[in-house]
Image (cartoon, rainbow over all chains, first blue to last red; front, side, top):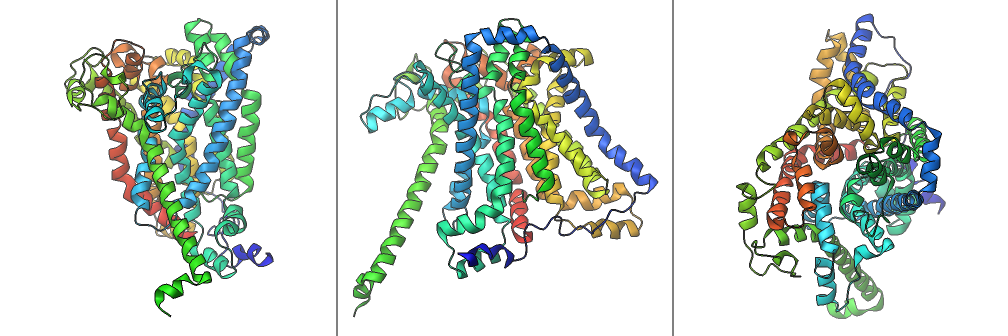
Length: 305
Length: 295
């Protein structure tokens, strides 16, 4: 046991911060200062014009407290909050965990692994709107592909997926995982490939293979990456609009909306942009701490991405 | 003792059995993954291959009974409602995606060079501040962006969408580039500077070539971000600048549309990212292997 825990220090150390960077800062020349500023200007301009300005405007729009009492009185809003938490919590965690395991699977040496990886990446390559429409048709009614397969192959009568709140929300979650699993699997695959072979070899000599290798060697080296990616994926999933909009479309009767689609509805269908903004920004008390935690983690830890 | 008998001895047999089971499990998992990945895409193909005669698409077939390329022909020749302007809309999507990709590469690489290679004090702070962008998800900003774009005079222009996509792609691009740039020794920059190279020359002749694998990853990421977008293209663009995604969504809400042509168009729409993936794959895998080697 103790020998496997020391394994990472046997190979070349992997988590030394900036191993190639000389210690200490050097002073910039004057011309370098000019160039540094010039290099930063394009992004700074984009950031100010298209992120800071609209974000400020959004906060101003949603600043009226009466909007929030209006939201609290709308039963649709409360249901939507529950849906959003379930959608984000389940799809992010299941997706990241599967991606972590599958990245190990795709490290196997088999002749068919490479072609399989290409097939596995297809969901990432197909455009979201179109494939979620396909998901919708695949699940709708008795004639959808899924229910046909269920009845022809297994002899089961499939449920009406969009007539039941939890089944419909579950369909959204599965569709979302389907679309984004390959992306994170590739990120973790890169993370695993960054672990030098010597570390594996040394672990094998000490008898750490299979599950024990994962727990004592791979996981400690990937934990930082996993955590940062999970936080980032959480932020991105909160903003996801197309999955719910096209797969379940909020059916049955607005019971599977998430904050992004509900805010959109308030703003564009009901013509109440301020209320829509308030609904979306009511997620900020969750989003901002997650973003700050992610940034602090990135600052204090070395990440092999 | 023959070889077979040796294999049947308990210790060998157990190991052999275990290996067979592991192998079978591996192959089974591979099969499940392939089916899982292909089913929704197969469903697209199933609908696209139907001849357009009534509601055949939803007659509950698992195989297309009489596969026909009629849907593809209709889509490519723009011969049905909604698809009159298919290639124009496809062109708009492509324009947005390519411009987003190129601009993200430019702003991202310049910013990460300035922060990481110019020894800017507090440089990491700047990159992390950029990541704060994600604390308000992109789709939450669509209403204020509509008004902001109106103020900028960009509303209804493809550049409104491009600008927002670049703004949301760059923080992640900088993160990826920063991580990768650690593998390139700063001494290389120093040596070039001692030989009289300017900052711009170091950027052009050392940084960009050595960063190719990471840049390939960023290019692919940014292109897909724009290609997957629906909300911004829907809200910020005038009908004459409609993109393929928005058109497909319109078609989706029409009960009486030519579904087969629509799914055929969806499959055509999936081709550019696939082409870019295969074009960049070599560089991206190089990136992965270098990561592996450098650890």
